[in-house]
Figure 1 (cartoon, rainbow, N blue to C red):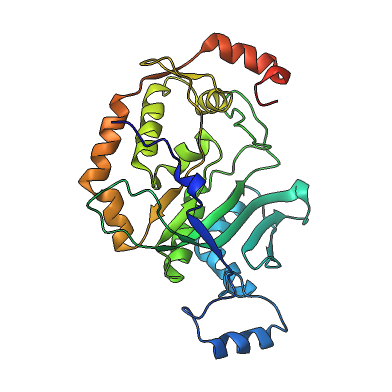
Figure 2 (tube, rainbow, N blue to C red; figure 1 turned 90 degrees about the vertical axis):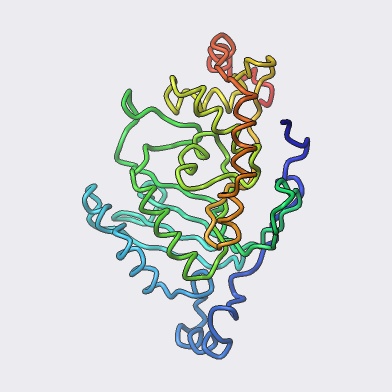
Length: 298
């Protein structure tokens, strides 16, 4: 079963919505009152004051976990200058780049599926909380044999990804979102997210499952670098795999949950997995990791 030769990402399936439009959450009169009280301060995600965000982080046990890891003085910074993208950062001791622990950039978007993979499904338009950027890092830690560096990673992780995911689910539920959406830039991002997220495109999710099964004999770092360098081959047809950034979704509304739980969706995943048996081309991987200036995209 072959996937259509179009990626849903290329069809512009998302439409930005400014966070300032919060009429579905609170009344315009109440919003203006809150803004007056804060002397023009823009509410985070159109709803939360900075004090409320602090409480959310506290109730999500994020502060407690950071304290256990030795960061006894976490500092919260919120930037709402861009009406479409709100940024939350957590530092330790000092608010500068060298002390950054957490950076989350969120946006509010309308997801309009253009390719309808399941003929019998009753599609809709979905209001999504989008993870534009997520960094969870420990600047005081170092990479080593037990903690290999992943593509585009500057410092080892904090080990709090699940805590942050749970927190975002609570926030998205409070905002009455249909789901949480992100576009994983790298293979390892998709693998980590796939514990609770699935690709909207069942063919892409089946391909991800085939990659995970085939490359499980390698470390996640090795597999992710090999994928990003174009060194992973489908042994069934000899083609090299190219990573595509597509919609990865954690469904919250009943309609979206039904989509991912449907027999049609699962059947496409199973059939797609049968088409692939991947492995790393060791010679090509060795060459491209030692000759980065000769990469095809360099």
